[in-house]
Image 1 (cartoon, helix red, strand yellow):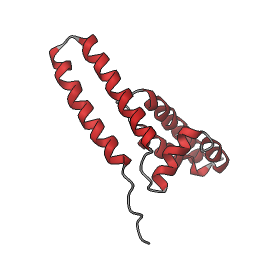
Image 2 (spheres, helix red, strand yellow; image 1 turned 90 degrees about the vertical axis):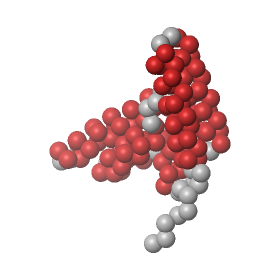
Image 3 (cartoon, one colour; image 1 turned 135 degrees about the vertical axis):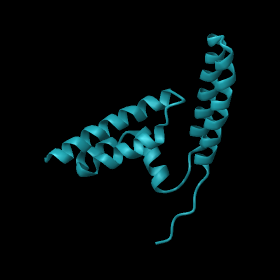
Length: 125
């Protein structure tokens, strides 16, 4: 393995770790990290294949690759978790600027999730 492959593999694993954390933290975007991580692993096909055997990574990658959008279950889980954590944060913060800012962030992230959920037309070659 050359140095470039080693660096890309390290970056890919780091990005996948951030994507995995993003599954649980509503403000950290999962999809871009997973896609970039899998892309970085293209120089190590065996490792890439093993990563894509992990259901959560495979779902994000295949949904993007096939332009299927997100499953309704993923959308519901994402929105419930997002708003649940935002509401808890609002009540625990007690600061006016946080109480005003978090719903705005929630609305923006909700719009993004709903946009990602829609299937896209496949590009013609």
